[in-house]
Image 1 (cartoon, one colour):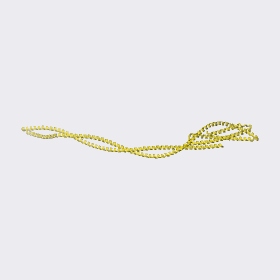
Image 2 (cartoon, rainbow, N blue to C red):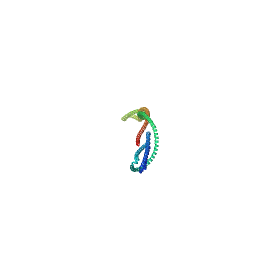
Image 3 (cartoon, rainbow, N blue to C red):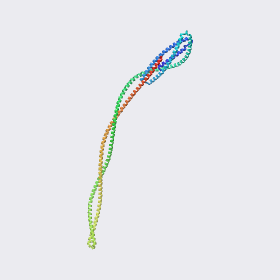
Image 4 (spheres, rainbow, N blue to C red):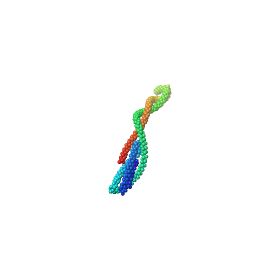
Length: 552
């Protein structure tokens, strides 16, 4: 509770005490036997009441002055509160201010009720004072002239005494209730004093806090302005850097796209070179395989040729040996052949002679048969001739036997010669076949050599192409490595620029967020200030109304 509430409670307490004293004084000083003394007493009491009323009015004026001073302090506190809210919005202060405003509304309501009750009580007191004053004045001015009227008035006073007694009972009851309320108010006043002490301490702390907050607010305002200026400069700088970074990133992206295109072309060229290299390697492998096969065939052909040459050499040696053997046999057979020819010639001659002798012998036998009486000389001659014929026949048979032997030997020799001739012919055929095979092998070897030379030439060409392809591939790989290195460098540069751009954007976003937050806080503070100003205007209006009512 504030000082204003305490003041209002004290005012109400004083009013209740005054009313209680008035009614107790009326009860105490109200003798009905002597109306003049009673009237005088009432006049005295009326003067006392008037004095008390003036004192109460003075106290009320003092309280109103204090109320105005408290209102001024409250306005100062509200101004400090507004400054504190502008400089440093705090949840605790806002809660306390809200609670204070709520309590203020309650106190304003209580003040309004107390003022209404005060006005009603004041009106009743003023009315009763005026009535008592009028009645007392009339009684004082006319004590002698209007005795009867005094009696009547005494009667009326007695009646009014009864009425006042009833009112007194009512006032007693009200007094009891007021005393209980007074006790409550005293207890509440005590609590309010303690609360007032706490509030005073809190107010001092709040004033100190507000002073420090105001100082901090000034510092923070200056710092915020500097920070906003720095942030604005940084935003401009970052925008410039962002534009440059975007331009650099665009250039890097173009360079990266060009590098990727070049890399793709280099990859394609490398793939083509690799394919050509694989084809050359495959051709070389195929040619190497063919060369291996040709070399194997050449080796086989050379081996077969060597064998054929060896066989041909052996056949030549054998043919030469056979030829020499045939020549030797011919030389050996030549005398036998001549001898056989001579023997055959002789045999033919002998056969001719033998045939002639047989014819002669037959003729002689016919003659002898015709001439049985031939002489002995003729018979001897005939026997002699027959003996000669027998000898010649025996010699002829011997010659024929020798001829048969010679013919057998000749036949054997001829057979051997035919065999040798057949062997020689077979050897000639074999030799011809071997010669033909040798020619075939030579031709095949010549073809294989030509193929081998062609394959070697192809291998040489392919090796040259392979070396050239390897050189080109090495150059392509070197260019590719350079392109990849350039691409990696561009990617690293792009990543660094992108990271820098992200950091710049993040810092810009933070700055924008800080600016937005500051704008929101400023808008909230402005709204809160406007709301507090509206509340202050309403409170001032209420205080003005209360002051107007109090003055009335």
